[in-house]
Every structure is written in C-alpha cells, then in structure tokens.
Image 1: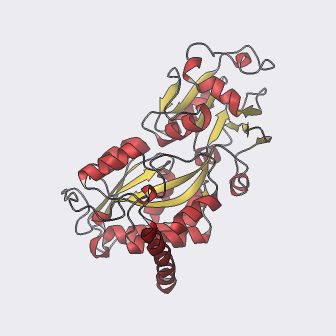
Image 2: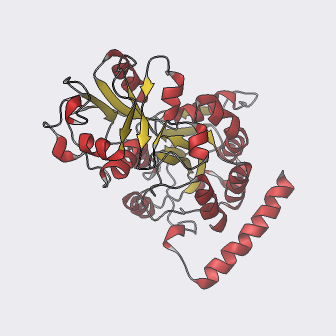
Image 3: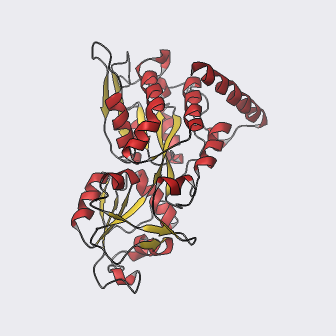
Length: 353
C-alpha cells in the first residue's frame, strides 16, 4: 500500500507541478502551511486526545471508525467525538479547538478566511456521498413523490405562514396541515438543502422544527402523520421502518434515494459529497492523528456502507492517502458547495489538486 501511495503521490505531484507553473488557483487556497499556526494547548499533543466535532450527518461514519480504532496498550489515547453541525464544527475547528471537523458540505469562504486569520490549515478529505432524503410519516398515503419546484414552494422564505396545508402544494393532496422538520442553521445540511432547493444558501422559511441532531428529526416525523422533513440518507436507512422516503423529481422523472441512484448520477440535486477536514498542525511526526486518519481512510468504505451512505470508488480513497501522506492543505472548491456534483466529477477534481 505504501508503495502504491508513493506512486500516486508522484503522479499527482506532477499534476500539481504543472498546475503551479500555470499559476495559482483559488481552489487550492492555503496550499502552504500557515506560518502563524495556532499552538493551542488543547490540540492533540503527544497523541493523547483526538477532538472531533461538526456534522451530525457524517457523525455515524466517524463514530463507526472510532469504535474500531485500536487504542494503545496503556489506553492513553482518547477519541472525543461530538456534533454541533458543520457550521458549528468549523467555528471550533478554525479557532484551533478541534483536530477534525466532520462536514456535510465544503468549507465556506468565510470559514476559510477565519482559519487563515487564526493560522489554522486544513486537509480536505471526501469520504462518502449522501442522498439527502425527504421523508414523511409512513401513514402518509397521498404523497409518493415531490418535485424540486414543489419543495421550493414549501421551503422558500415567502412560504412562511402562508403555505401551511398539503393541498396548497398539490391540489390532489388532502386539506390537512403540513408540519415541517429540517436541519438547524448551524448544519451543513441546512446550507446545502436551501441552496439546492430554494436556490440560495441559508434562504429558508423559519416556521419549522429545526435541529442539528438528525435523530431528533427522525423521532419527530415518526410521531407526526402530517410531517415532512429532510436529513441524511443514513438516518432513513436506519429508521426506514418508521419513515417513508419521497421520490424526488427534478424534471427528469421521480427517483427514490438509493446508492444506485447516486452512483448513476440520477438523484439530483440532493446527492452530495461528505468530508472530514484535518488540522495539519496536529500531524507532525505522524503521531496519533495521522495514525487515526490513516485508519479512517482504510476503513471508510466498510464504515460508510455499514451506516447507509455511498462509499467512493477505491481511487477516491487512494487519492486521500496521497493528500494525507503529502500533507496537502487546501480545498478543491471555491468556498461554496457545488450542486449536482457526481462521484466522477469529484474524483477528477481531487486528482488534479
């Protein structure tokens, strides 16, 4: 494996060399280690604790990895795993308070600027794809599919206090109240869903039950026959006996969320990559964080599948090994999420980085 990584590193290094000769790109912001890097006492030192926060969508993957991660013989190494949403996690990560941020969207320009101001670098590692799921109560016998335009009509700011019944969305649906459940405003899922559906990130009605905890949303929808909500696909997979997923119609026919639909680029625009961001200041001497991240990448395909997300092809994880091995700091995105991104397009971006 090490030999293969070195070969890939050499190949990608040639691409990087050519790219650098042509000029720098905003997609590789902070490609060098910041000189004023934070030396916070609570960042991993001597390999005693790895602090992880961020997305509740990515949380199940990282939790599965952490449970399998072998501790040292003296049991001195601790993995502290929490979730406060992608945005909440980046607030801590860019302040130098955590080693890893789980993220359900790419790092934003404002977060990049905060990290730079604080001297915090980041290694961006895509680990899976998600089929962001719109779900209703299983007793809902009228809605089987929903169009992107109908979702926008429900969730746009102008709908607040006005679109309150199912028959206002589709006339054939009943004259019943529609109760909404969705991601909290510190969630990357909130950012992605609003941009994909409403057309502008963070543009949403406010009169809905919000939470950064997807399990809370599942529980609320499970109890409410009039519910409609959205969250990561893994939470639907885990609780599909309690929920009903709606097919999404983007104008090319209604498609249920599934691994096959994501792999075939059919589940758009709610198919999205998931990430972990690594603080490179915690990586020197290939200590605990390097070992954990290396273990994470090796075991990601199985962990991703086990919790219900869509793993990347092998090439995707091999590129991650190269970026970790080289300490490749930066992002292939321009400080924003990219709608309708396919697995193949993501891998091409990563290979050129």
